Amino acid sequence: MNIVILCYHRIGGSGIVAYEIGRAMAEEKGHTVHFVGLEPPFRLKNNESEAMRFHKVYVREYPVFDFQPYSLALASQLSTLIRRYDIDVIHSHYALPHAVSALLARDISGRKVKCVTTLHGTDITIVGAHPTMTDITRYAIEKSDAVSAVSNHLKLESETKLGITPGKIKTIYNFANPEFFNPELKSAACKKGGKTIMLHLSNLRAVKRPLDVIKIFHGIEKALDKPAELRIVGEGPLQYEMMDLAKELGIADKVKFLGVRSDIGCLIASSHLMLLPSQQESFGLAALESMVCGVPVAASRVGGLPEVIEDGKSGILFTVGDTGEAAQKAGKVLKDRALYDSIVEEGIRAGQEKFSMGKIIDQYEKLYE
Ligand code: GMT
Image (cartoon, rainbow, N blue to C red; front, side, top):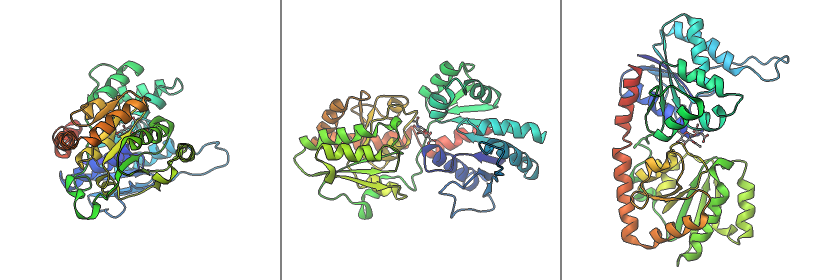
């Protein structure tokens, strides 16, 4: 098949999942894949080939526009690519604007290309749920030939919030590429030191509740009998408030802000616990990446996270916003070696079986067919 993949190129779950699907379709399944957007997915940069290439969308800047019309430039250039490369499938990641541009490009091209859309979370729960965008999001989903959501929770949310025809959306879970995330990373290069290391990985926006990360770490480290450190990976609007809170709580020297990093697997593997106290999370790719590296996750019981983590078995779940509960449960696990080890083992097992990359790529290929 000749496949186009549309995604947000920035480092984020949906871009990673989109890139890995494209890579597997090209390298493992023998299809030809065209990524189309403003910038290539970051993992593609050193990996272009005949079977997998990037096409840049050029947006004409003109002073008459208050905002440059990216969605239209994308649709227009996509219609050319459909004809030039005889495209069979356009796979849009994140409903807006990709799925709408894909539908428009199909109409312009006059070809029978199939439109597949994957819903990732905030495209429904925040962007699509806003009254200004509900109708167009519903339209994009209903008109797509096939639609997937990354958890049962997101599928249900989409059906109820947008009134989507039941049965239209199929759940296909996120997965983590074992080349970058695996239990072996813990050896040699990514060894843990003497301190108890906790890690948070996100874009530090309100939806991730990053201030709770500081509070939970504070609660845990008070109860531990050895030194602890919190590492924050990523950048975002709440990072200065996080720094202020750490200072106020007297733990500024124990909280390290590492910024945007590309060695995520190693950073995870050299930690003892991942903290993910999100307000909303349709799946929580960072949780899965952590589990398959053998690092337990303490996450809020929201969205699709209970489909990823079984509380007390493959990780820790707590009520969103209840930093006391989170610290108490996480502290207990960190102090009980046998419980910690069983959670590590079960996390790796669940991650590798329920969310196996091979099985999930097969599901996407079936959806295309
Ligand atoms: O958090 C976002 O808004 C970004 C979005 C993305 O584009 O990466 O994340 C969503 O998609 C990921 C990949 O499917 C999911 O693992 C995340 O849980 C989801 N984020 C939210 O639902 C908040």
